[in-house]
Length: 178
Image 1 (cartoon, helix red, strand yellow):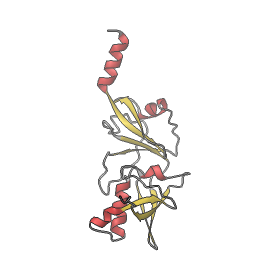
Image 2: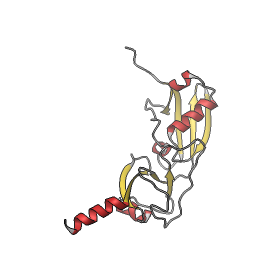
Image 3: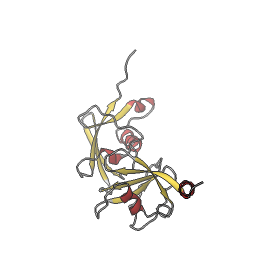
Image 4: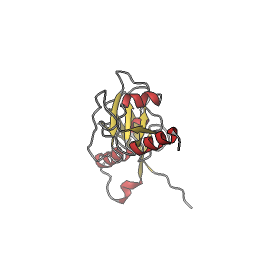
C-alpha cells in the first residue's frame, strides 16, 4: 500500500458527500472533510463567493414552514451542520417572492430559496382551495411555458437574473390518453 492509498482511504473515511446548489444550475455532488472550511470547499469547486452570496443549508426534505437562515462565514462543513447527501445553497436571494396564477387569480408568497417545489405546490393548493384527490392533478409550470417544475427541485433553480422572484402557472397536468 502506498502513501497515496493511505490518503485516499483517510479522505473517504473522514469525509461526507453533499450537494452544492449555485443559482439555477443543477446541483453538484461534492466530497469534503468534516473539518474543511466551507469557503475552501466552494473555492475548490469553482464557486465564487462575494458579499452578496448567502450560504444556506437546506434539509433533504424540508418540513412545512422551515426556512433556513444564511450561514456565518468561517464555518467548517461539520460546523454548518452538513450531513451526508445534505444540501448547501449558494444564493444571492435570502427570500424569493413567488407569484402563482390560477384561473383569473394571482397570489404571492415569499419562500426560502431552499424550499422544494412540492412545498410551494402545497401552499398553492391551499390558497386556491384545491382539496381531495383532484388537487394532486395540478402542477406548477413556469409562467408562459409548458415546463413543469419538478416536486423535488428547489425554488432557487427557477430564479433568473438576480430578481429574487419566480412566477408559476398552476395548471391541470396533461396526461396522455391511451
